[in-house]
Length: 280
Image 1 (spheres, helix red, strand yellow):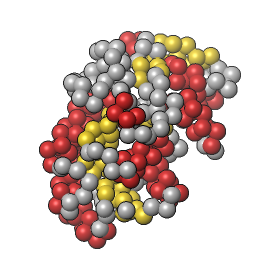
Image 2 (cartoon, one colour):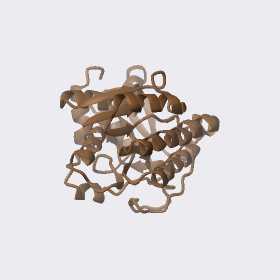
Image 3 (cartoon, helix red, strand yellow):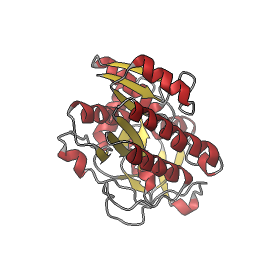
Image 4 (cartoon, helix red, strand yellow):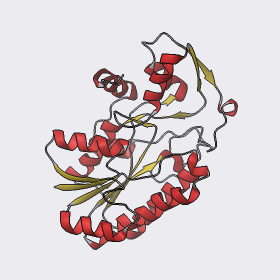
């Protein structure tokens, strides 16, 4: 196996590199300076020279609120860039792993969203990621689409680091309590991405997050359980954001469980991450 990773400098891309090094799997990882996914010639050059056997497409525009105003950039990276990568995978007959999001759903039901549930994104980011899914499905036969949610990890900015940093300068925090989902540790996601390929699972769409459900408020309480700080719940309507978020975006994990992949509970994953992360 020889893996090519896009989005090498991002949160998931860096986690993947760390994991693949640990298990001694060859990879090439490129950020936008080394292989801009909007440059077809550059992508072709890398694919031709590196001769990968599988592509992990982690490059993405993920600034959910900014995407409401930066629509062209959001669409260019998440849609046009994905099309370029998918078409190159088709040219070189390579399987593609594409990372998508729970934000393709509207969260208007208390049921868990299955892989074939109807998509209805509420924000520009979700719309672009859904369009990226469609491109992958239309372009390739050998692909894995992995929808995930509430991602955090060692690399980059995320909710865990934000809460820990705020706790250093505040005695009290208010956190949204009426948005329900599943937190996801990047290590769990990276392990599942490789697991799909290594075990030759059926191509198609999968959901991956850590097990169990949480609100952002409950998530924050767990993150800061050792800190001397007061955390109070607040409803979404009292915390306006540019991008509308789904209220209940709990992904159904049954298809992933059926592969035999062991999914840690989100509290166990969080505690392991915080125990081993030197920054926290």
